[in-house]
Image: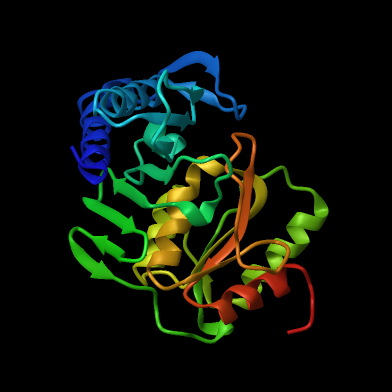
Length: 272
């Protein structure tokens, strides 16, 4: 079984589990995941389906998942799989049909970074979109090649901006300044889906600078890079991250480097 086929099967199994158990969408397990979030029953069900497919594939994975953390293998791993079984859990709980499943795989070695991502797959459960990024080969949406939007002036851009954070004054001030600098905002509350929509050219950028997004969301930034976009970190450099389980992602992902860096400079209140 190929790695891509394995990932497709894993995502499909998770999606089936979600759709067949929607009556349980609001049920909590009573537990908290390694990132401090309350766990929904469907989070666990979807994650268990993904893990089962990966572990039975004949490919040796070390898995970093949202609900269980690191899951090792007795053999030498071929890949690290970063798994987000449900991105948009609050949407799912409330019946809002904007929910995604994401997996990225990185060839396993002693030192791995986000640049090593080989394959990513994101399935938007209710909008019937499946995005696949393959290193060096671009991104497809439902089998058709997509790419980021054409360059656009900052004041004409439509972006996704994640504001879900304890509202300290500096973050509020920076966020208001950034949102005022663009034409408009859209947010699905599934950051993986917003990153896919940036990769496909529906959005001009997606901004998450809250220091709250775990590295398991790597598949989303991988989509933007492979679709021809640019992702910048808070240091103003091209986004590259280590893959330890406690790493949080902070970035501006945009259709091009100039737009990404302009948005970041506005956020950081530098001249541009």
